[in-house]
Length: 264
Length: 263
Image (cartoon, rainbow over all chains, first blue to last red; front, side, top):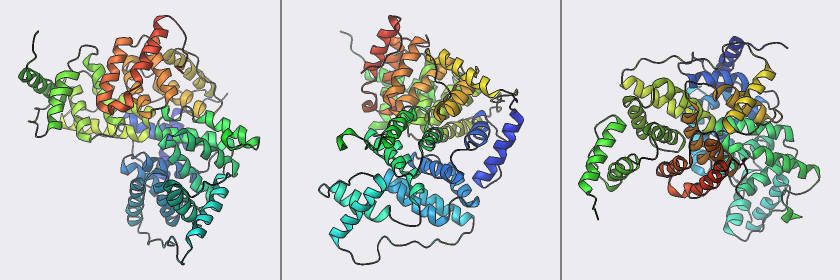
């Protein structure tokens, strides 16, 4: 069995840290700083299953949703852009997606970070599609929301009776946000998963874990890996039962069953 | 019946606040500010059930993990250093411990606060032992994690199957962080308890409250006292069910029973 080498670990961590934050990594001055290099960048980011683009989406969403220090968010946003893993246009879509799943104020933090880094890197403004350019019919908008909800959540959509559903979930979240083409469904999925885990409410955690796998956006193994990646940003206690939820929902998806018995 | 004296309460508050924040207590300009002096410092910090070192660890852990101002965290760090309840090297271990139990970014807040106070007090920065100095075997690292897990949690650890356990709990949290002896197990326990309570997930709250007492790190009275002090940092609603869990787990521990969840 080959022995693993601490010097190699630190060298790999320093190289990854520089590359993934888009700026030179300095020698750590404290124990805590050294663990960014030797654990987070040397080991967690090196794990093979999830591609870098996904790790950036998880890291960026977590930093914004959990209100982590702005320079940590800035580092991930810069790294996502300088490695080419996420474009400016995609990141702007991510701000809106995060606002929906974690509240508009958290979306603001991400949007401001993107503005800071775009300026720092001298990037031109990314054009964005307005939410809607043509006149629309109220019923049709709700119907569009219903259809997109089914595509994303793989279950019947709620009826448009309560304000939460009518004026929120159908009218905006699924009629106008999820179908926006500039950010693909798999990418939106990771931001959503961070949002539901940060909120810590069991029902959306279960239904979104189920939908993530039922759509084919991610495999059970990728979901298990998500739990570890998220734990690094959110702390282990918050994630302690999430792997169990992955297992339960993966079993339901494999058996062609919905996320909850109440839907059967 | 002996009556207590408000002036005595305030005087004690000023003295305690000055000592524990390492700077002169400001004259309060609002009822909120007065409550720091007359309630938090005068009464909570003078309760006998926990020693000051433990209270500093709870306060500093909460200051890093719950959303509070940098000023509040800085005051506790300055106080812990000036009263010598915690050394600079111990505080640097706390940053990493908070990172694990509340997310890496939360460790940053604490580490930066220590940087500021280190500079303010003109302290010499301390060296730290690297995570791992010798070459290692992958399997052995997991095994080290399992051994330390059992030592800390008092029941067997997980196997390295899912990423959360393999790449996190075993590989790092228990193989590399908990065994760092610069900060003792009882001290790490208070930061851990703040982290699990802050995350608000029932299962780890229950296992960690059990383990804190089953390991002998603290007893029932100390855990109940922890609940009150944590409430002052996190707010009462978050803490409302904790005393009940403490008593349930203390009954088990005092009767030599293994861990089992409270339904």
